[in-house]
Image 1 (spheres, rainbow, N blue to C red):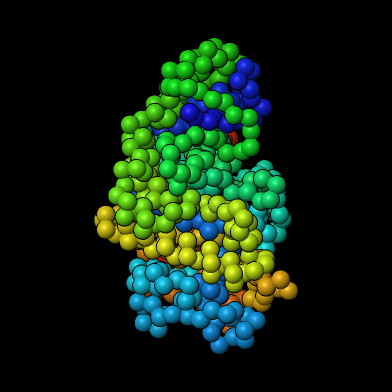
Image 2 (cartoon, one colour; image 1 turned 30 degrees about the horizontal axis):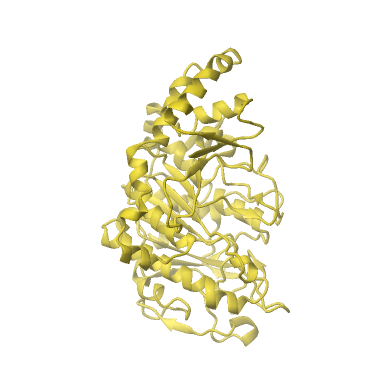
Length: 460
């Protein structure tokens, strides 16, 4: 059963916007002239990456216990955990990363990343789009102008058509939201128009009964349920004449047929057949919803999806809601829950991609919206910190065994090698073969560059 979501719709009275959304669901930039123009503006070096997996630890993973430990700092800064040696000489990481520490020869670490924004929603918007939120540090902000630049997934859909029955960008296993179910801005296509929205797939791949899940458009809106492809197409065709008279395009019926084909393609079904994976592979990733979503991401890039973003999902009955927003019981949360899941899933994904010969052509980005404060608060937690934090990249044109950037003695501020979200997005698409100056067209046919950042060449 599929869930196609849009605003202000019901099963009996479907708005024009709903039907136009259905018709456009699979049409991410499917124009030959646009594709050729973008390729012509691409970087002059061959693309190293064919696809990207965003390993999204949303909530704010700490820099001190991961990539930028400060063992010589006082206890109120360094925390209670020590460091361990890695495969990279002279480089140490937090002791709660035993598996990942043995893979640093494949990783490039950014230790001086900054958004200068301390709110989940607005700092997250900057990380997902490359543009600072207006204004900074705004929590639970709405996804609307002027904060409506397209997400990385939307850029991918604008640059590449779907292949093999799947769209070029997918987000799973749910959207990112603040308490109260306030979705972050920067998760959709924004000013590019809804036809470039990445597919948002709500699912739980850790469920033993998991099958091809519901597909939805971003947003918290009323569900429309369709029993099968024929039912979907029949309903679309029933409304087509009305839409055409109201100004719909003549290609709408073709678009709806394409959407229907994508939803039910054999390649899509195979990608979601996690039960076909050997049990030892599934166990290597871990049994959590996030971990099995990472395994699903690997299967999706194998099936031709260009960008898969895996968002951390909260875990009930755990401190801090089972997420990375560790305002209290920070040490307990990262030791007993967060870091073990992360370390196992991240290392498994790297090793699995390498075993399958996919690591060189798949860019993997260890990703959060900000870091944590240098000092603990009165509740034993670390709070939001966008001034300086760490990220990691692997595969797809990245030079392994590299640490770029330096923070101060408290991991509070960058000293050198500072990079920002626009630079990260420029680097990601550079690895995919597109220069930052590559232009796409918004919904008003105005040209916009895919990034206004600089490629981080030190890690390539």
